[in-house]
Length: 328
Ligand code: TRP
Image (cartoon, rainbow, N blue to C red; front, side, top):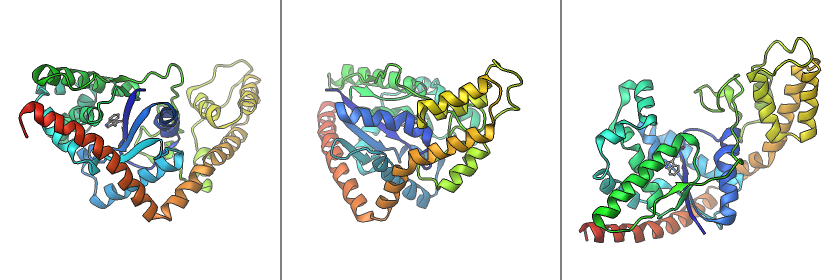
C-alpha cells in the first residue's frame, strides 16, 4: 500500500472544481491507500488573512471535506497547524533549501508578478513547507495537479539532500497517477478554471443555496448561438457542456449537444437544466454541511482524533530526524 499525503488551503468554500479535482481523488484514494488529508492553514498565512476568517475557513473546510465523504475512519484527516512537529521539520529543511532554487519556482515567480508588494519569505519557502507536509509522514505518493509537480520535484531534491547528509530516512515522493481520471472543471465566466479568478461568480460552491446556484448558472457566459448546423462549439458553451458531463446524465448532455449541432439550441433551456442538475448533485453534500455545522462538538472530536493520529506519525519522524541531525 502507498502512503499518500495531500492538503487543501482554506482560502474559501469548496466549489465544484475542487470536488471533481482534489476531493474525488481523495475519495478514491481513501479506499485503497493509507491516506493523510489535511487543511493547509499555515500555507494560507502567506496572504495575511484576518485571524477570525482563517479560523472560520479552516473549520469550514474540515466540515466540507467530511460532507464530501472523506471518512476519518479510512483516512487521517487533520488540520496542519495542529501538528507542531511540521513547523520544526520546516525549520530543519529550510537549511537544505537554496535561495536560488526557490526563486526559480514557477508558482513563486507568478506570485511576485501578481503581488509584488508582499513577497515575503514564507512565500519563497512555500515549497519547503509543502515538502515537509509530505515527508513528515514519509509519504510515497501525492495526488496533485500539474501546477504542483515542480513542488514535488523540489521535495525529491530536499529529500535527497537530507538522505545524503544525515542518512537514508525519507522515500522520494511521486505524483499519484490517475491515468485519465483527472477532470478539469471550467468556470462560468467563459474561460479558464473554476475558482481561478477572485470573483465568486465563476464558481458554484458545494454548500451554496439552490436559488443562488440557479441565479449564477443563468448568468453564465455563452455566445450568440450557432448560426447554422455543424458549427464548432465556442469555449464558453463547451465549458457548460463540460460541467454538464459531470453532473447530468449522459442522455441529457447528448440531447443538448445535438440541439447545438442542429443549431436550434436555446441556452436558457441548457442553463435551466444544468442548474437543476447541479442543485441535485450538490444536495446531499449541502445537507451534510448543514448537519455537521450544527454539531460543533462532533467536529471538534473528529479534529482531535485526526490530530492524534497525524501527531503520532509526525512525532515518530521528528524523533528520527533529531537523532540523525544531532538535536536530541
Ligand atoms: N500547494 C497545494 C496547493 O496549493 C496545497 C498543499 C500544501 C499540498 N501542502 C501540500 C498538496 C502537500 C499536497 C501535499 O494546492
